[in-house]
Length: 378
Image (cartoon, rainbow, N blue to C red):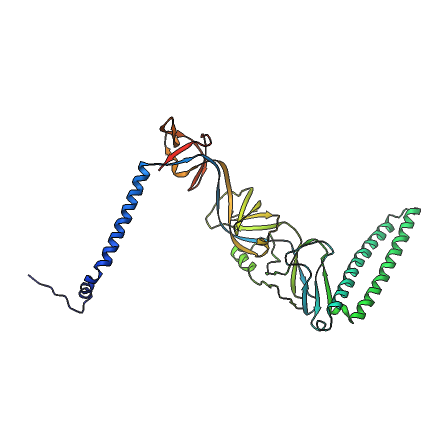
């Protein structure tokens, strides 16, 4: 009979040598595992002997998934006429009216020469010149229309004379204002520029490189999302000649492109809800692409959450059902009886057939039970 001996330097010999010192930790671990198993058995027994009770209430079941969102808007980019610095006259993301001044640009050379009073004077003159140009343009349109449809009536001739006199007066005021501006700063148009918007919208300096996106652009979704998340200019006051520094969002309706996960084939909803930073935003369905993996929605509130980023991830709720709600574990299915839940009638628990409208892992919307009915389940 062969006898084996352990070498003192072997792994097993070193393990047996330290085993007496590990008895207490091993005993504690075994006791903890025993109590964990015992607690699970006790919980299972209590759940079997004492079923949980829940009353039928009114609720909503929502179905959704995480999507990559790309925001497309109608945007007009503003370019600087010279190198200099921009001073905002309205806050970032402000909704402005037609003819409202949003910023003023001062060239690098004139920045140290123009004081605060000089800027206020030039701002006032430039704003007045803008309104004069708008009025002169409208008068010229009216005179052109009357020249084509002139019927030589006394009233029309008097109106024409008034318009011509008004135009001449406005042009004279324009020349005087221009001379006043030249007295403040020589060649003032080359060193000062007042940005006045010619249509209502939202003013923003947050450029991200995605202002030229087209709804019909046939790029890959991932490429669109990458392209739309780069190039954010930030809020730097420095501007460069002929380079964009701000933008006007000219429409209050934006398009959201939602990229679904690969392999998902769902029927597009007429309406949906998008969860962003804990807030819910209603969307209206617009279209889908040929793969049915890219859904287009419209949104008309322009919240700051959508203006801050061109692309982001969000949770899209594409279907919701509201009705009488019971916990999904309370449902039981049989081939002949269909879906049933256990209710109590005069103290006797019995299965009651229900019609399941919709369900998820936690709740089910059913028909066939009165509101407030007590149901039992384990």
